[in-house]
Image 1: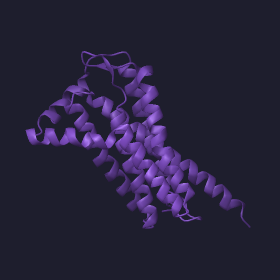
Image 2: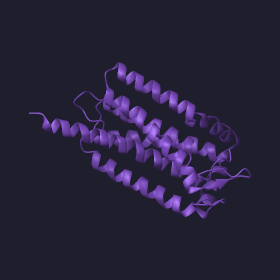
Image 3: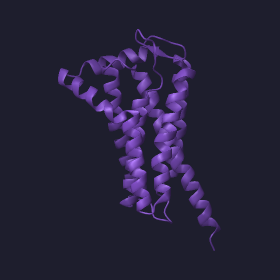
Image 4: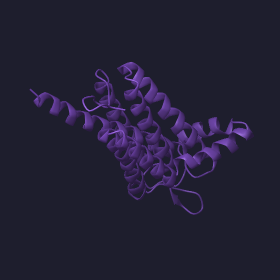
Length: 218
């Protein structure tokens, strides 16, 4: 976890992180505009659906099971527990990241759904972006960043760990949501991008404050 004089992101990684935030936000915006008001799958969804359908039957069951890790109660409890551990370790900035990253992701996915108004199924449930995917991705990304800071990993190692953690967690939960028929694949992409933009955005903001304070010190 970050020490009192250490940033969340290591030196050399913040420009890459900022570029990733812009890219993720752009993808989210493009998908939101493209599928606003829609109630059917798009061309991209068809290609991704075929990849999901190629999974064996046992894989479908496992995919459905892991979706629990992206549910709001699980994400909320896990983020709160992580923040508490950070506070006990006297790492307030780490605690703030643990709460603000998943929290902001949850707000965007929750309030973004009625704005985009994309629906799925007979009940016309709001679908874009996937909150479960966003929740799991944000939590995994926060854990990866805090672990990297605790191990004092370098920029490249931190970015690789963060990317791998986000892709594995978001991909697993997102696949489960598609298999369950709760989301289109592009909803999953939207939820993933939301989490990446929110968590890295919060990390960059915390680092900006830290660097500013460091610059003022004699």
